[in-house]
Image 1 (cartoon, rainbow, N blue to C red):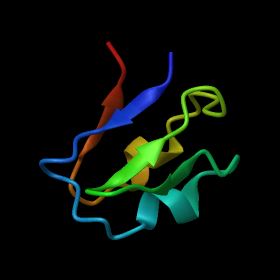
Image 2 (cartoon, rainbow, N blue to C red):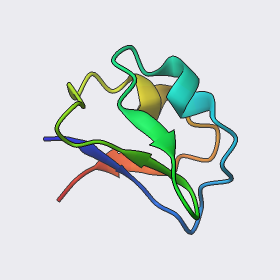
Image 3 (tube, rainbow, N blue to C red):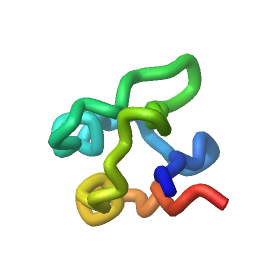
Length: 58
């Protein structure tokens, strides 16, 4: 199951994108977004996000 970024709390700092080992995170219109097909569910982005804006997709 991939992860998702909450656009309401994401500050677009880019830490998650830099930390992602498979480059599954890119800058979107309002916040960063995770490509569910590319995400390997490693959880690195969750650990690195300073605003705790990333969680597992429902």
